[in-house]
Length: 141
Image (cartoon, rainbow, N blue to C red; front, side):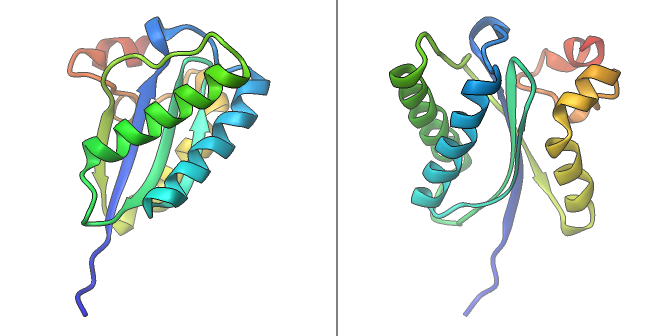
């Protein structure tokens, strides 16, 4: 049996970067994303967020494309959050970075400490990109 492990750091933003991820939504979001990930056969290593975006470190099975995975995660979470605490909407697009075993611990720690990184200004631009043009914006965040 082959050994296959595809690891990704995924990130996407709220619509127009609205600060919608308050403590109540954050609690629901983590549960919703974990449940949807399990449904899709993903292995979640970490979930973290700031007020206007979310990060996940996940293992994606080879039977699922990254774009389909993100589509399902964003669609399912947006739908569920709108039922509980409307209005809620994700911005179009996402960032996806492939990871190797050697940097997993670093990326997981970064994702789990999102609020601190944004509060202290220690964000890493390479981990904050949602689109090709986000580099300058991530540096200012």
